[in-house]
Length: 299
Ligand code: GUN
Image (tube, rainbow, N blue to C red; front, top):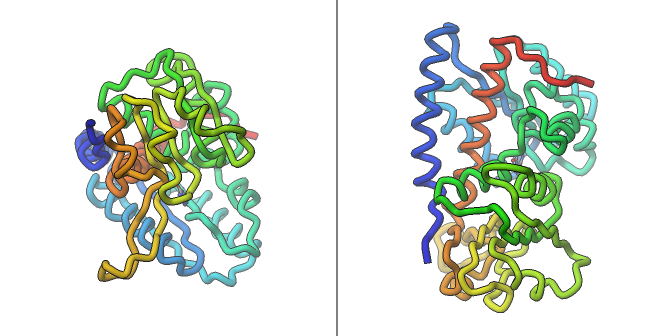
């Protein structure tokens, strides 16, 4: 069994990004710049945003954090998005999710300028991705494809089962893995809470992606001997044996499943670092396109 170490893969790729950032910074006289909006004080979101800021620093990019109160109105948040959209010195913008319940997530995402939408969540980017047109691709699916390629895991003609149909992971990943060409050409089955006989479908798979957010969900009886298992889950579960009182748990029962796999991602340290890497790649891409005045499809 080979561990798919996202930290090693991401660090290797970060060096390439840092080189590109240095080259472009020299040419333009300013660094690529990522802005993040954080609403409220969700501890997991605060950690994610802090990590993203550290990543930017590591590769020589600027980052700005806009901290907004959990009671901000829909109009107030959209105003902040618009201000960033119009700032010529900001290349990429993410609104950290989830948002408080009183805010309409889709309307906020729709307010982001698609050319700054480095999360790839805007309908224009999702639509372009599905059509195979140039677009920002959401970070976790792109990171998973990069991780498979980094470890030379073939995808062409392989059976891939994805568990979870979220807009952020399951749906875009199904598209990426089934598209024509390098890193794609899989036969994809997208499973969800209404799927009948999920264990039987999973046992067909050469590649299983667990992305449903239920700790320890994927068991050994759902995995074919020699399968590649990608664990997207990262839930905080109570653990009184740790200092913090919790630990991070994936969607895969690692102890049971790992001995059956040819390759498996750990949690943490598997998909997470690759997701963060993809965000850096998208931000660099946004900065380059801004400078070269590349026009993508706009609504
Ligand atoms: N919350 C969990 N994952 C993500 C992500 O990739 N982007 C944003 N903006 N919020 C998230």
